[in-house]
Length: 453
Image (tube, rainbow, N blue to C red):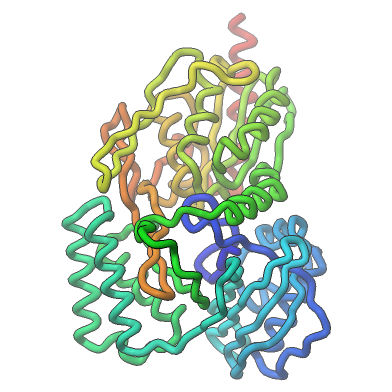
């Protein structure tokens, strides 16, 4: 299960970090929640989410969690069906920990609901995490030794893997300085400590891909001689990840033919092509006879660069060098060229438009940047989020993980990337107006082409 917090929607990073944490929401059983602000908020969330009704979910978001996204919650409600609440573990007026059981995946999970305020109740954190097979619930109270162990492990991973060694050294120095000042001494909650470390590391690096996560469980001991580096999902984790993507239709939510024979496709991520390649083939073949294409990436948060390469390949008739990706740890550079063969016709001549927002991130930005620098698409909308570095999830102590950006893209045209700056649109409009604007531009382009024939 993915963890959801105030800072993002549920599917964000689903395929780029710790993919073995799968989000599931299931309906509530006959378990009483405490008569507290936190309990009332959890009840309100479950009632709204389990209804599957967008208006009810939007009302919950407006009243309790205004930084959340009603569309994203509604989509997940339709895809997953709700949680069965099995027990309340601990609770105070502003915080609850609880257990749920997934009806669809038959997995147990551990949730934390924490409020930023109680009058009125406002959600600071809502996270629900699956307990991996063999794991045991162990939501600890941190002490100095546990914090030190996590800091040492995080420092080690940054030193070995982070894309820029000099920035890694500065981040480690900053965290150690916070530690010396006693800034972490009062933090006993694992999630709060992970948030503090993420904040302090990003304050130096400004790298939005970098994160520290807390696991409220202990996992089985790894086999002797196993790597302490990037996490390799087990077959069971891979199967759950595949099932999640299949239930989400690989994040492809709309494939339509608009007026003027304009093709439109909206998708929220770039999942691995070995799982979701057939979905892309089906979408692109459905649009095969359209005269223009609009790719809606306004809610796309990234994914697998191989899927970016696969989708871009439909838009070029000749082999085209679209991106390089360097790996600092392995000291290797991988070139990405359009594929020599795709299933179905290519769209080599049709006008292409890409819709962006401030939420467009990571692989969504790569797709946009590749097409913009090759002058193959018109970008319509807002400047994107500015996250270029690929990331790997790694263990960092008994209860913590760190997502370490380990490399960077190098565009063959600009020799740079979009880290920290984002991708500037060709036509700047609000995200809400991007589709209407792109439709108008496409219709005018097609009309002009028709007149010239």
